[in-house]
Image (cartoon, rainbow, N blue to C red; front, side, top):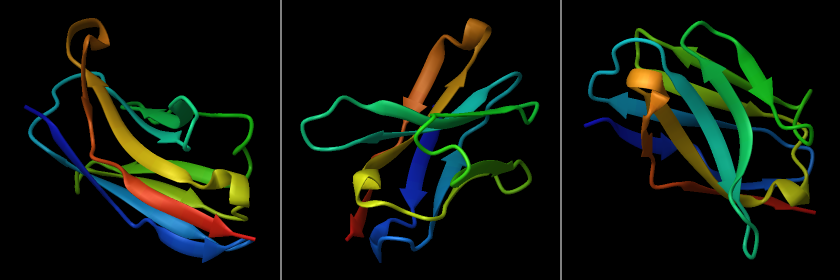
Length: 118
């Protein structure tokens, strides 16, 4: 069973930066996709950024140019560098892993709160 543990959330002023980390325990064999999602109060969970095992990335339009997703396979960790934060980035951020045959399996972290004050 793959477990994900996020860290790095907190309170920051608008324009500031935070780096989220997602530590992966357990073994993921083969092609996989790691992602960050977020959910603000009253909203549905939405995709922020994803990175494949091959290193390809994709971002939500609202964060493109401000956020960067990366992974360190040696450390089994995925990162989300968030710059130029805005109050509308306030949400609980979740790490996600999709893996297995046809990426049919997935795991979620417990979430980490990011609050951006104006």
